[in-house]
Image (cartoon, rainbow, N blue to C red; front, side, top):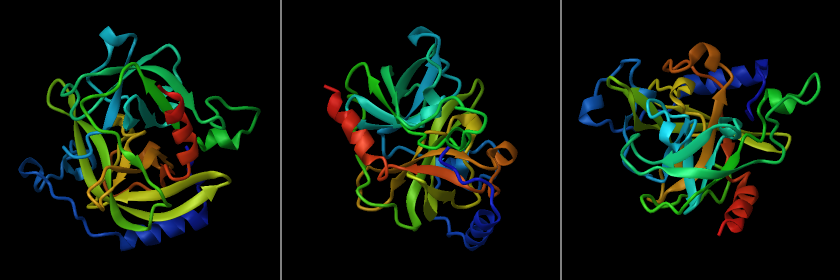
Length: 276
């Protein structure tokens, strides 16, 4: 996952920084004001910006995609290339398709190639494989069947993500009956950055007692820059050390692992370059 193992130092640091926190800067839509229900993704607002940060649906074929839940988040970084967490797309028998906005609000484009980082381990190698256990190098780029014409690609961040509350976390939440996932976001804070060997990760906490949800397919979803008015991809969420106990529970998640897109810029730009 590119995540820190549970350590006294790491937990103490996260606890101290989490207690300090960042004041929420999210601007909920009227339908979300005062919302405290567990049904709200990350406690955030419906999101229409950064359209290139979308989602993957999964199924046995394009005619059998499961539109009731997001398989994982994904972000367009070239007209035919998206980036997501590598562990999201290890099932070789599944079909994946990319879309944007609320599920069902845009066309879907089939994924035709999947390229995980060469150091990612989809299966454990040997009796103790730390790279696999921590899901290090958990980044993949996917090639789409055709160029996307309903959203513009994001830029890759050109520097290490600065510490501070200057990013926006994007995710999805199933609402209604039957569930039809909607796109939401909230302000988030980069608390610290660290390299696990050559795997660059950073810690992000959504503000306002918010939470990310493995159950809603938020892994692979991005944090984007809130500065400059551009769609700049800062990193992608690959999981939380505490998610088995705190998934979707607001204000209780620790060690939220994000892979830095600055750290994987060469890998992703090489992928973009090979797609014609």
